Amino acid sequence: KKDPLYYSFPQCDGYKEASLRRNMRPTFHHLLELSRLDDNFNLQRLPAVQRNAQVYVGTEKTSKPARGGPPQVVLVRGISHAPGLVSLSGSRRALIQGLDELERAQANSKVNPQASSRIFLHSMPEVEDMTASE
Image 1 (cartoon, rainbow, N blue to C red):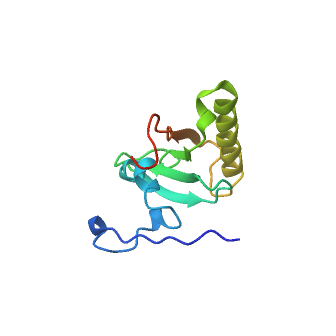
Image 2 (tube, rainbow, N blue to C red; image 1 turned 120 degrees about the vertical axis):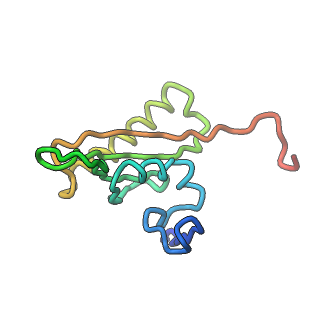
């Protein structure tokens, strides 16, 4: 079974397709703070194995010339709906999944061997003391 394809045409971009948001659930862009990344980096999306993870290789947007070109960064961004994330085993599992995505990304030919890396995980907590009707 294939995941559905998503295309976004935000007003802020003049209703042009936002390629950074392609095949991403509508709320992911904001939860993963991709607009902040897009302000600071020229981003290129890399394939990710996990459904709730996004992997990007970015080069810093800078006006200063740097020897060897601008620094490159591998960015792994993820969202977790898992209720056990606050436990030791749950947080360990999330970290290992992020490190696996990072390792796969570093094997990509578009990634410079000297690239630094950053992992960001957005945890969505359960709402307590509420029923479905509330």
